[in-house]
Length: 146
Image 1: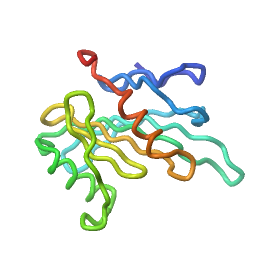
Image 2: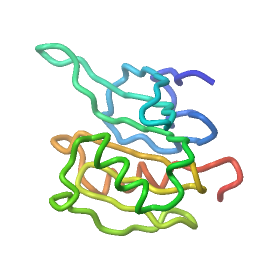
Image 3: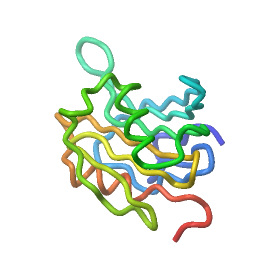
Image 4: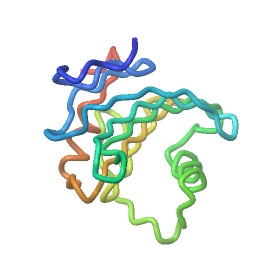
């Protein structure tokens, strides 16, 4: 399925996952992308809004698939390299997503849905709180999840 229209109350389906909650005020310009980096494929949906000098991304959801994503630690290391973050400086805390443990910061939450399959959610921390990020992340489910 493609990107949902802006009237949708949720974020639609993305590569086997349902995005069940969008924060109020999230941009209505929605785009889907497919890419690959370091043998990991990405299905990405981005919500943007128009600002005075162009566009600003409010929310990104990535579904990642790759054999190198076997554990939460491997996922964290992969994302640190992908987003060019200093692993020692990246302030993450654990959170529970359905039956999986995940990690969350002020602007990003991610978890391993199954070995080799992960979800990564990023919000604009100037517009949205960590509680909003957590609500978006907790609203993302696989078809066989509660």
